[in-house]
Image 1 (cartoon, chains in turn cyan, green):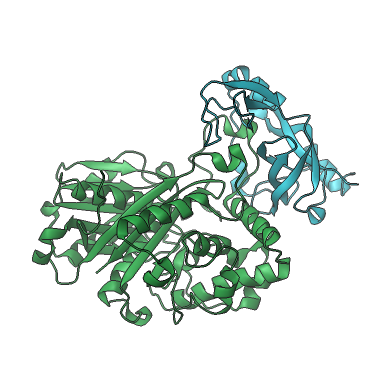
Image 2 (spheres, rainbow over the protein chains, first blue to last red; image 1 turned 30 degrees about the vertical axis):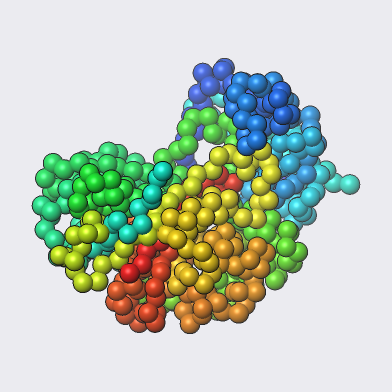
Length: 161
Length: 397
């Protein structure tokens, strides 16, 4: 999907100042030790799958969330970034600070199991529906300018037939 | 075998400030305002209070952490004070601490006080301060409170085949009802009636929720003094007895195990079951005379009617359409105007709900007085439908 307007392009590239309200002023702090320790989860969207009952979970768990299982430390890494999913539910939010309002996000149920809350990208908020298929895309989440860090992560991209 | 706390503890005094944009008042002013009314109502003296529980959710923007601010503001004489925080159920958590303090036999008389000062941020919506840890921005999404609950509305509409127009109409009736009640309450923040059409046509905050589907954000404080039930007759002729006070917290099953339907709040349902069992209530729809529930958003109230078993699953719309929850209905809800009209100073809200139940049971609710209510319930929820804490407290004569 192309950009809606030249102004949006200018705002995305920070070539034009953008009013996002006092709520949007919170400083981003990037903890590099967290990224070092948990980079497979953060950048790889790798969760866990219980070897005992097969329940996949996002994010990483030590104890199986299946109430009938509850196995401890029986997890293997499980990659969500290459899985397709469906929109379980969603909203388009005008309160969330965003340079591209409304901020659309929702819960995704993955083929093969697992559920995650994700920002949406490359979609028209007016066309989003419950049950719509999505794939994941690796995108910029935020820029921590003070520490010269671009924070990347995975977003859900509705698949338009 | 645990026997529960039914009828072991009585509420003998309560206070509640005027809620609103209290730019006139400091956090300490609010705390003193609630405490002075509460103490006067109880007829006790400050020296009678043996321990206190203090609830504030976002102290980083008001009074700072710890328990000292309650002791030093109210000049409590070196008594034990515990500061509690449990998301938006913080006020109920403070009350739970005080009630358990008495029920345990450790104390005869305890104080619970909750306060939140939110409007000094200078913007709408809840403050962002108080963070969720350094990791959250790295693997989470752009979630706000209205957005988190809007997703439950989306799912509810989808699950029960309501088109957006009918779904929004159902929710608009919830808000219009609360505004009608709140208009009668001098302590409420928003004291204006609104029509269903106004609610439906208001600007969208987080689809499908519009401005009037969202509760206000306010400053306020509320307090309660509780004592041993067997000594209550010494203090007042019309005490209110605690029948149960329960809290249920998500196990993570909702998101991590992914069996949750997204159209209800599991801890609300579980806290209800635990509270009814403790209080000996078999049929909540018939036995609970009135309730103050956590209507942070219209959808929350609607779904809570089902979670607390006041309405059958998927059928709350029929009860809303029939006016069941109106002030003149069979089971009035938010008779004081609710979070919708009081706004939501987080640490105070659970105690504010109890203040209305207390006044109603004593027959002192002024223009809002219901005819001889027997059993009152408060439902105070913190977090998001997908992961939350829910307190349910039942009181009666």
